[in-house]
Image 1 (cartoon, rainbow, N blue to C red):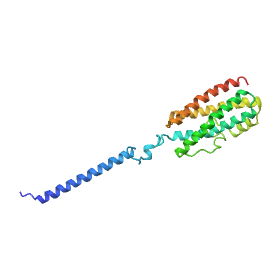
Image 2: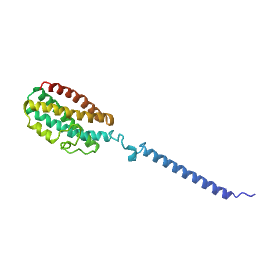
Image 3: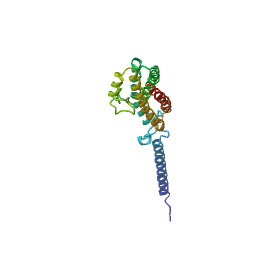
Image 4: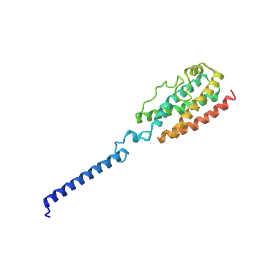
Length: 209
């Protein structure tokens, strides 16, 4: 049987072209898979990043922590400012000053985080109706505190701030457990430690009021 060498050459060239095409497609497919998992590419899918730390090292729990804690701190500062002109016990006045001195800078810090993360702040009045973050005082609670003077103010302030601090600790514990950003987790732990000490202090004060 006579072999047609022209046909063989055509077949060989076609086979080589097909192999090259397959190799190219395989390589492209490998790159796509790598990008989908965030390896060497910037086109990771939302499903791949949902619920995990993002480019800035934060996640949704971090953003929620700052969004809820900012108005929570604002209310604590508002309550603390009332003590200067209304409290009778020096210990209450001193504690109020310490609360304001600690939480004012923390508000600034958390606002900076939200700005860097591209996350919106909650409205300044968030939670005042009693439906916001844990431990928030209602408008009626705040009106009662503003109207009080002397020993009555001291008692109300301690009782309300204990509840307020307990809510902050609850939110901070969630952040420690679920957050991703190291600085946000460190602040949450500091809130837990500081505010638990202040709760213990206010409970002791209540026994003498």
